[in-house]
Image 1 (cartoon, rainbow, N blue to C red):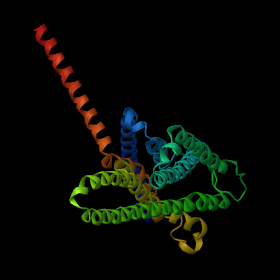
Image 2 (cartoon, rainbow, N blue to C red):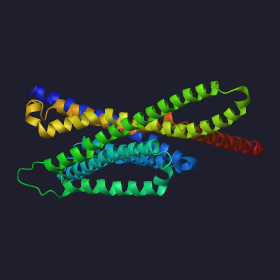
Image 3 (cartoon, helix red, strand yellow):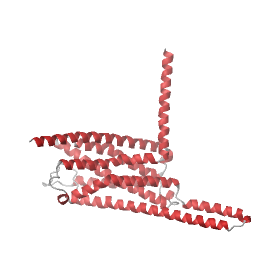
Image 4 (spheres, rainbow, N blue to C red):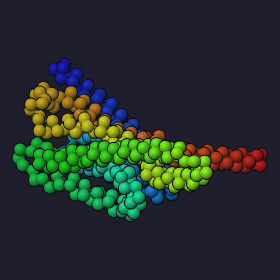
Length: 354
């Protein structure tokens, strides 16, 4: 009897601790993503770039996680003692969790595709990828993923279902989503980045060979042909610079790689765990583990790690983009200057009153 009371107490304590940590995380995610969105939208130079709109889309998905998914998950830790509200909370969490999770995958995929086109088709990028095109792609992705994530709402309940949630994922739906919209996209992302780095390496090797050829040709020129050689060398340099990847493209590529790595680190444990719990529940987990305190602890840690991606991705963006840091600093200076002006104006009013 004493053991049961102790277990219940520890579970309740863990519930309060998890609610507190989730609340802090939710506040951090909302704050960071909101600041990023405000600064990006305020900068015309940044918002006019098509590639930035893919980043904006990812920031919006992360913001939704901070506003809805994480708070609802925290509310689930409370015992409402109402089957109706438990059903609403459970169904809302599952739907929004699936929606933001698969949208995150497609966001990372679209970012990788954008970088692949920008690196491989340097001269065609501006004609292929425009802001209007990017918005159409993003809208179509939202419609597609939302439609897929709505399917579990239409599963008819059976007598064997003990789940009070209206949102019920079938094994067929889970398998299809994991294979087609999780594993396949990530393999495509790996292919894109492998092709990008191979393309950059080939360009650097080619430019290095051209440098050696240019120097050897220049050494054989006589003194009276120096001016002619300089003219040819100027033409060569302009051609070589066109072959090189622009610095801005390289910087955005680095950001994209970091975001993809961050996504893999944060979400891979969740994917592995839920694949095992769905298709290998009896063989991979012991009977004492199922519905135990250890299961509650492990699932919380896995979900929390996945939620951290919503905070880590915008932080990567903040610390790696020089232009973003410049805009942030300039806004901070404006706020400080405005506050100082208001304070000085108030002091002047007080002075005249006295």
